[in-house]
Image 1 (tube, rainbow, N blue to C red):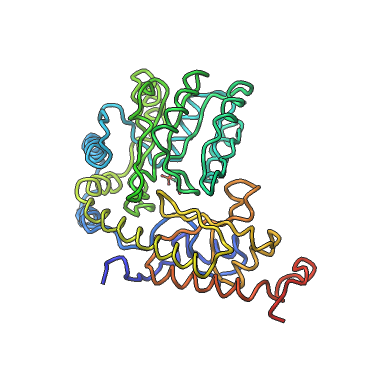
Image 2 (cartoon, protein in one colour):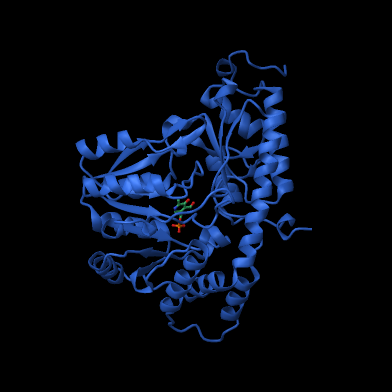
Length: 407
Ligand SMILES: Cc1ncc(COP(=O)(O)O)c(C=O)c1O
């Protein structure tokens, strides 16, 4: 049996299955939780061992180990992504969103525009708006069933709106694109032309499937003056609750500026648990990650085959990276409320509603598939059954439009 097939007891304190969260967000606790982007898999042993070593200590004194962490991150990126990173260009933060929040404040002013490519990770809206900056939405286009960047719209917006930053997500959550060198090069070209900084959130960079290749924005030519990259071992190794992150800024002056601000706020202190777990993950977690990627890839193939045969009315955007799948339910011809009812109360699934990633995406759902295959199969069988039955009588009749086929 594969190690990732094991079903583990889910702690009710975990956000994904916390009854209070489920009730608040989905209106019921009677759902299989496949929403927040973390994993149901047992953590890699070397990470657990590093943490165990720390908790058996008698003294929990101040301890900083960032230099070793930065070296481990650099070595990992060289090995996994052929990416040369200078260990001196990092700044430690407690998580990627913290890093983005600081960068936005350092590299733009209140009222400035920050361009994001929607649909996108919903926290990006909050991190921009809470800093008093404006969200400028550049919608991704679907061409031949494939999401693409809309460069014409980006250029029009860079020309006419007061945009200081492009906040890139690569690989992109929720649509799973892993941006190609050509796409990134075009984006850099536009950013340089209009004097805009690219902040690249690369937290999902290690979850990339065999047909795709991850390219960091920092690996591309003429990008070093106007970029900041963020990363973390959280998504790669399922370390969300012991969050740790880093910012990588190749430009010396910008690095100094950001490091000073982060130092002044003491955001770089971190916890030795997170730091040593990060080091263990990057130094000793590679085999576990390769096994995970193989497992997820098989899960994706199972999903694709099942959907082709059993759910042709739902469109799957098969991800090139991330363990999220993006599903389009618009062919079911249900109202937005009816779709939510069908998924939550009939299929009994807690998926992330598409309108979290931008209001116009209410006919989409994101499903997190980093769970044992048996659980994902169960979820798809529940989904198929609900779709076969159609919207049922428990849904508000006025809304259901006489679509009820079960009564
Ligand atoms: C693109 C992206 N950035 C950042 C985060 C959160 O990172 P952190 O917990 O390190 O702030 C997530 C989590 O889902 C994410 O998908």
